[in-house]
Length: 491
Ligand SMILES: [Zn+2]
Image 1: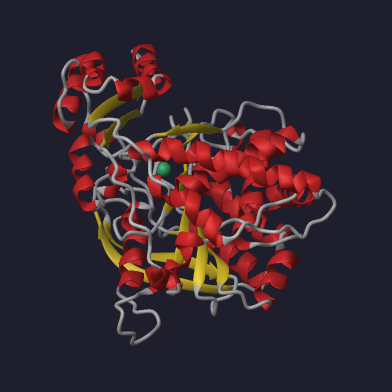
Image 2: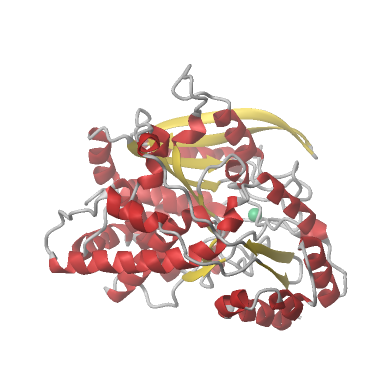
């Protein structure tokens, strides 16, 4: 069963370009005539005999939930084909930059390409129309106790290109994200960042207190929150504990999101986020090593290992800073649904959306506009990891991650393993996670979650034994490079 689906998915991915050019044949070949998302789902039911329990999907939204598409800007679709092209364009741009850097090796002061140049390539339109094509892909992975469905629904339209932002809009602070580019890191800088990231002793010391059950309302949960708060305050970040009550299937609960900001006075934020609660499991102690102890530890490690560089950066009073969000209540108490899940992220996104920034402004701008990019980490720590680009508007940042993995590999600064960042886009996967309430409010999202999910997902085996430290080490090095590049930090 699993084989059959994998073949179907891989066939679709490998032949994406060709399939696109063949237009509507795709869906006949892949889904026997499925014409829209409902028919696509119907085709999935046919493949699997119709015995799919939608209630068990957990992070994956069931396809009725794909109706959430309606809440998402349809420009995603318009950019579908564009993203493939941009990715390549961006990679070649990154390669060009690397070549410049190699010429200047030993000199960390790198000249950045002008904004005009960056804008030029980013806004270039794809000429011609590849034709209106809709593709559906579905994958079912079945393990003993969990069922996951990945339902991909992507529509491709002829793009008319994007109107160039006019000069006036570019000077507005909340549009700065649209023209922001990475600093570009020299080989020497990558080497130094890798050295700082590779301190696994420090990483494990930060991880250990997180490797306990931490169900909302338990002692383990408040101990873990204290660990997060103490660590971040100890590094002189501004830490807020934002508590609220919400009704759950097991009664009213108090949740507390932890928001740590390097320099709260900076207007714009690169946000990195994960959740710190763990899932209730009546079978025994569910540790959730990947879900999400490791992501939380990666963030703490980043803040600790780059402490002096980040402190220097905040002293410069840049308009851009780093913000960490540790969400509470990501997991469902009973069964994953729109109301029983994502308690912390739903609350925080709504709260920030209702908070004008700057206060009393006339432009209807609010706190969410301060988020340049929202990077969500989840289900990280196992050996088998494949990432994909999920959102066209952050394709360039996904490509940046991918490029850093390749460069670090070429520089022999990574443990040997297959690349994790796959040069492919998977749009409209329907993956439900803490990014959703922000995505719905137009915050640009970069979601680092493996597809398929790790085999230990929501199993009691998601514990220390599931972790593969060479992979975690690689992830740390890539995240360090990405963050330094985005914030323009040179160690
Ligand atoms: Zn989970």
